[in-house]
Length: 258
Image 1: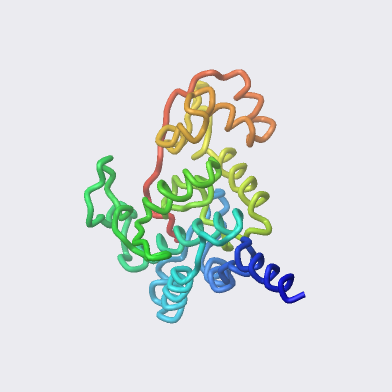
Image 2: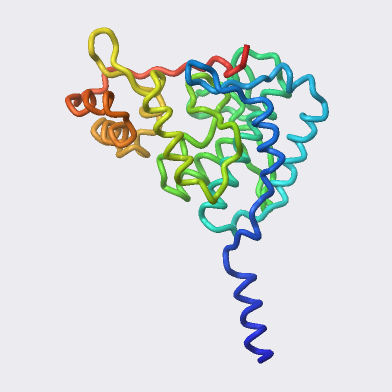
């Protein structure tokens, strides 16, 4: 009897469990308070109001600090995905609030030179998780993308820009992760900043599909297949008769609410 209880206790300790999940309620509250769903389909953030609210800035800092104390390596898959995406988004918000007012997140420079020549804060170490110092780039490109192998990562992380997929009005939660990611993908693909046909009938898509083409099938055909998977009927119909991506664009303006 004692041996059976011991084995059960060991199994409970070793098994990935929701018990390791971070408490996202504080982040839910902050996002609901400051993220605005605009009529044009772009979620924007009330940075001015947030920056002026000392208590809510402290609440965001406390949330990030709480995430740093978690052990994502022991989380179940969806819990870990949600954890890393929430951490990325919370740290991005911290960066904007610390440097506000700015016109673009690229106005904030990294302390380490980006080999891609990209201007922005993505290569500055910001957090320590399980003893490892991490940048935003490390969270996205060393953890989220290779670990989960899911192109929907790009709809989960937000770079505080108009061109980026929306920052959601609540944290990512494991229980609803798949449906929420699908909804985020559909919202972006069917918005003009994700995919659109110009006045000459040529397909223009977000630069995300060029920068991270490897995550979307590794070719224009792969990108088109991905877009068709999430496109609404009218867009899907036009995509079916399209074989060429004519151009890419991205708006780095701050996703600030007026």
